[in-house]
Length: 156
Image 1 (cartoon, helix red, strand yellow):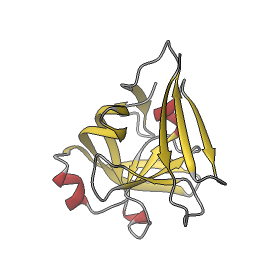
Image 2 (tube, rainbow, N blue to C red):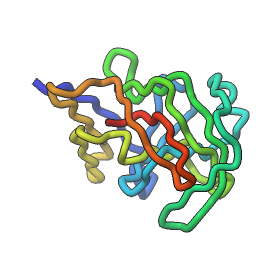
Image 3 (tube, rainbow, N blue to C red):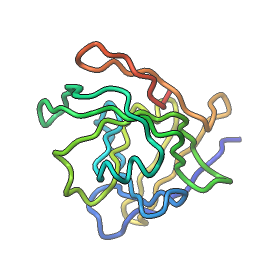
Image 4 (cartoon, rainbow, N blue to C red):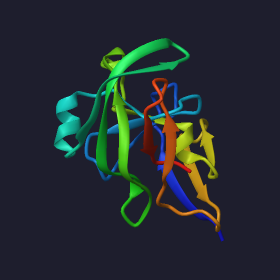
């Protein structure tokens, strides 16, 4: 039997944005085209989550071109509620000043959900993650950045 995690989407957003209930006041955008998670809120909020700086001035690229940011590691990011969640221990995120006015705190990358099923239901404003029996709700992966720096990212 697959474990399912249900989340409510922001009904006023035109993209899949949802609250992170275990992290009061934080919201996330699910970006199926993203390679790695990007922190868009204030670095002060990131530090309040006890995040630690890993590397400064990392260059990374995406559809919008090339940008620079710093890599921080969040001790634990929980998507869902503590009793029914995906857990991302030691989640690295790249900070970005380019998104500081974004209506969400964090861009979650498709790579974080590799080997999972997920459904975005825009009509009912819901997001469902399904964890197959051969996968776990604790996620881990490695992503290579443009400069060759390798970081353990949560995901497959």
